[in-house]
Length: 210
Image (cartoon, rainbow, N blue to C red):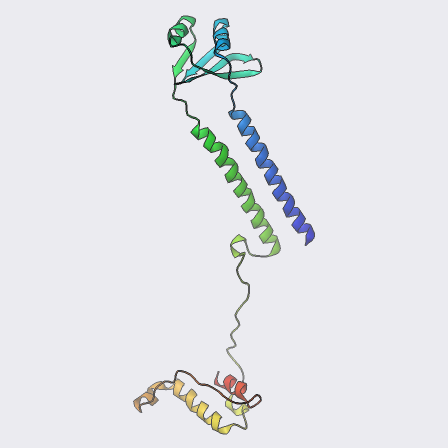
């Protein structure tokens, strides 16, 4: 039993490590180095830039070949006559509306969904091994209600309480044929209370009624 618990703990540890690595990888892939505008101008003059995306405040550029261990960059717009200068250099450019909300949202949503997916997988696997019948059965009682339909006890087995036995036999007959007694004005009783000291046959009478 302890070994099974230990294995499941390792599942959780591995899942947490995997989520951490994926989140770090996503953050690293999403980061683009920011360079000074002067460096952007120099790269532009040297012909290193293949394409740029012009936003409202930032410029996102891509190098023809990796330069200083980076293939793309971001810089802040400074000069308003940038478009005319780009036309003179022949660099491809286009205006875009930059928005990072989707990237930021995915950087949080994807790891969270992955975590809960792994967590559900581990819990279901653990529940199946322990015989709990799945995750949805956790917290539910496994007790079963047993109703004894045949007591194998009759009024013939009861002795010593003839008066009580006779009244109860009438009650059973009334329950079996309520219409006959109803025509005579009889009414169905709401219950029957057996009173007496221990050992006088109350339980045996109740089993006989059943």
